[in-house]
Image (cartoon, rainbow, N blue to C red; front, side):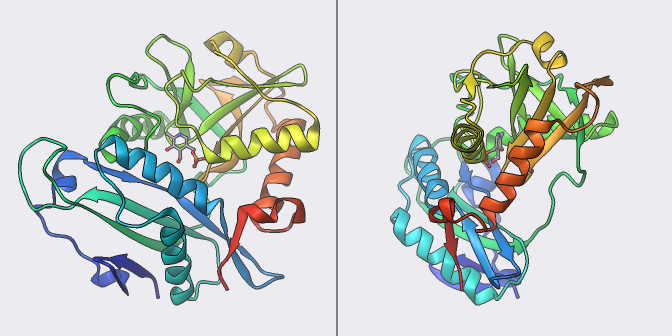
Length: 302
Ligand SMILES: Cc1ncc(COP(=O)(O)O)c(C=O)c1O
């Protein structure tokens, strides 16, 4: 059974409810995280990947909305592990923490409101249910830092992402790639993006309206340590994207998903590329706790 942690208690997920006047429900005044627990069948273990980093990002995003988390990062990690343990999962799971304005009150503002924290976990397999995906260029651009900071997972901001995803699906694609306000490649609706050209790996900079992904950081670390390739952060134009030899998306939900087509144009050979494949294999071993060198990134539940 799935459990939730709400109002400082563990309760069955189906009983976890909030009031209809909750501020966050009306004005998007909440910050969320997406964390994965990965089942390792051999070790009969769920490893939660980079748990601490996710809660550190949640704390930073919460501060932007004038919320102080009611628990320390270490306490949040413990609550999460205890909750997953209670649910007795034996499969891949997705953990959704939310730091939100909990006051039952109307009025657009950030101040003079209470905040609270909740978290739940559910079994969840692949987010993009394809071995390789086809992307469009979204007609929706990523907001600049001075509109809503894209560096925080603010729930209200995700309307921009939802518009992108639904536009992509309605046009027959799997995912949409957004551009920044100045027309450079930014990110997917729930993923960071990388391109490979002549053996070099590039990704947009943190100034290109991206979320600083934890998977992005993982891939940059693995590329450098294991393949000897230092990922170059730079502004990427549309032509460079179409012209790349390989392209892939990264995110906690989407893992590492190769992109083989953008706007009906093949990327490279139209098949997942060699460097993409190597990084994907490394990444899946690491998140499932199968690579001892990176075991510190994995928090065991059982
Ligand atoms: C807009 C956006 N970009 C990138 C990512 C990837 O971030 P991470 O790798 O930390 O999950 C996500 C998912 O969290 C996202 O929602």
